[in-house]
Length: 390
Image (cartoon, rainbow, N blue to C red; front, side):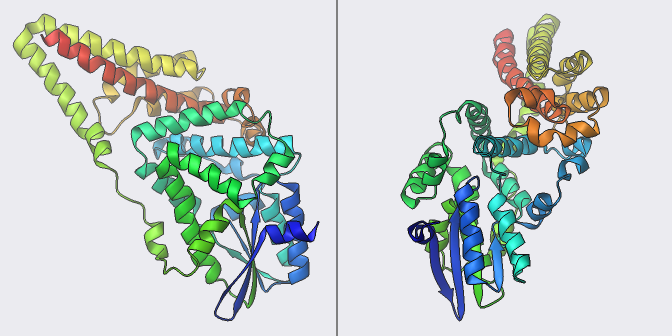
């Protein structure tokens, strides 16, 4: 590796008596793996910081991590959309890595292996992925979530022209800042929590790492932010807090069902039995048909589709239930994932077909698309019911 390449992606910082060598890497780059290996061999640090939290550290160490996933628990804890979004992000990274014939996250694994080889401590510097995703989810609006899902689906066709040279360019600070600026324009909340907050968190954790000489391996996108926040007083507990659900979530969960029930009552009271019956038909048809269509799009079992059609008109009026949970649990019962589905998950998420073929991801798709269909049905049914009232 040329000295200029090493210098370009290395920053030297200090705090008190500590010397920190900050390495900016691309997570799917062969050159980054070599950079990490070379710097740790030359510097022989007391500590190696890696951009991992405890759960991701365990995941990268355990090849069978997905085999321990309880898909029923994921649905019951209302984390299907969250897990599907995480898998989509992993898919994009894995597809680039596969194209370049490098293991995603290899530079982090190499950093830990080299740390153990030279007797250095391993210091996990990133915020817990569950806290990051929960904060992101709570602060994203409904439309932000839809936009994010749509962009992730579109990303499946966007890596054909990406070369290794393009990935190496990602390690250049000016290019990264431009990329992050684009993300900020379309989804500012996503950029703030996934990038800006973690810049602060990483800066604080790296500063507090033990030892006199520290090598910190982070994604190049975090380097400018870490340097910017290096002298800042950072409250880690505040960055780990899970914010309460927003007002819109409360309205959609509790106020909207009450409003719909009020419309039903008004229909029967002011319009008579026929008007009330027409409203019921509109409500059942819109919710049931669109929820069922969502399940069809996910290629659900016929009985799962039927469960979505039957459940949606009722669950849309129940703040504690969702049609997608019913259809997802039905699909999990009818097409229970086998060990091979969990074993093949990391390979299957590389392609669109794999998402629909693997029983684990198909269950998640059933949950998400059924819920989307039921939600669309609700908003279509309301104006139809109001029209019937007149």
